[in-house]
Length: 278
Image: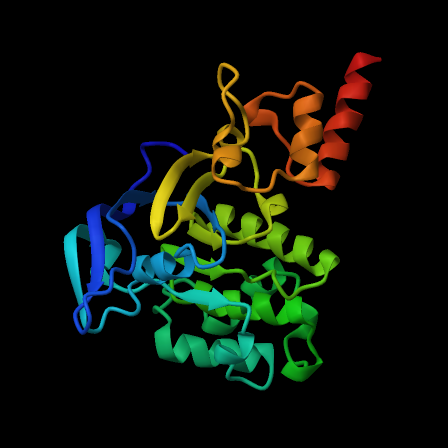
């Protein structure tokens, strides 16, 4: 991630404490998110991943005492999407839902009509053929993409996606992951991606690891799983499962920035290396 990109969220030793009982939501953090950055937030159940993400998004702020300092783009909350799409989808069809989103949160478009903008967004997400299809006829992955399209209409700089693939089939999971990565890159939108499925990582992702309400790692995914001078990797130290494809990547001698996290990507690398060798 280029250091020249604008910072859209920044926190210095920031810690929220519930005023009613003094409960600490998480230990002090110092992080920044830059425009267009992809950050994958991982950690065991109960580690504080979702709490941290909602705090960064600007949600759940009532009755909190906040230590430290934070700055956010335009001082506006960032949208959050979870696997529970029923919380977000209000329209009877994708088009109706996106019209509702635009009317509630959308920013005025000077160059094109809202229907053209929606059509382009649906086309990018490969949902154009479902524009007027009843919402209850859509698959889980299609509903996730409609919800994400609604967030895109907010003209946001960051979208928080909290385990959006956890209830999807394997095929839908990779379809959704691929489209979201492509869409975020083309629009320059930062993504805070929360997951427990480590095969969704890519070597150059920024990774945050939460452990017992503390942010214990902030670095690249590839470096998280590689050893330095014979020491255990940070993933091993944090008792994180090492994906099969990462183990095979290391056996093949791939460097940190070349590690592959799922079998499909690893197969492509093996094929490419085989062609090069011949």
